[in-house]
Image 1: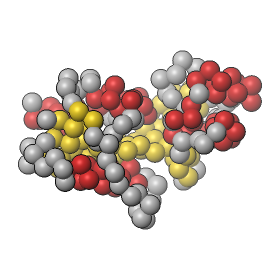
Image 2: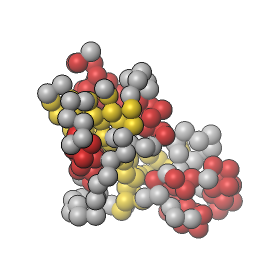
Image 3: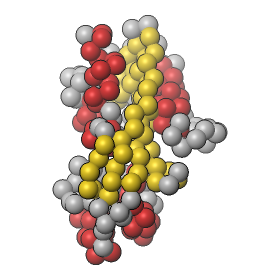
Image 4: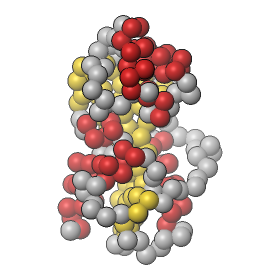
Length: 182
């Protein structure tokens, strides 16, 4: 059985591009004790999640992933309300950020852990555009208060994987986890 150790609807949607059938097991982990840099956090959290699920599913294949948005060496999490979403988007206006995903695959007698970076360049946004985006797309469940897949001109360009910014580095998984084993 293939297990996705995540309840993210975007990760589930993206994993279907690689694996036709899988089950969801939401890992229970305490991430508060991690003392690593912002860019190392996703990989360490993915490993914690994968191993938490492995305890109850030792004979299955497990994939866990974690993604962070980093702007000026500061992690932008999910906004708690619309005011925080506005402040986050305002801080990203006209700026370059990095989106880092770490994943951990455990199965078939091996562990594969990797980090993937994508650089995201935001357009310069007016306060009116930011408010309109928040009202239209309600981005409170998204790190950095935005979804790259939303049909709105937030992003000027990206360097790297579009899917990584959505939350699962599909191309890297295809190259390093799925192609060699199937």
